[in-house]
Length: 71
Image 1: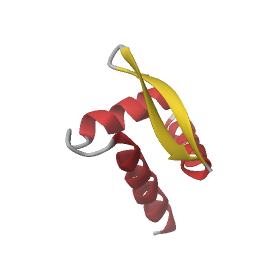
Image 2: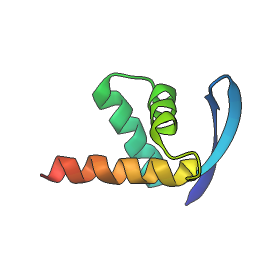
Image 3: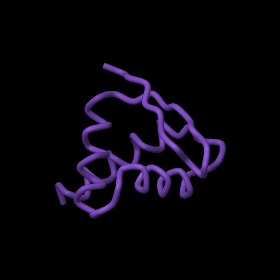
């Protein structure tokens, strides 16, 4: 199920829509890296093309992380 999530980025609140499964993997990514979820999201936000959607960038980051684990 897709849910809206509210996060703080660069000092302001924003919302994003993300499936529960991707949200859970983002939490695992943050935990594995020893960082808060908000910090991970901010890092992904900083590294994405400004024309790309944040929710899509988060999904692609999760996919890349999972693919790296398989290797």
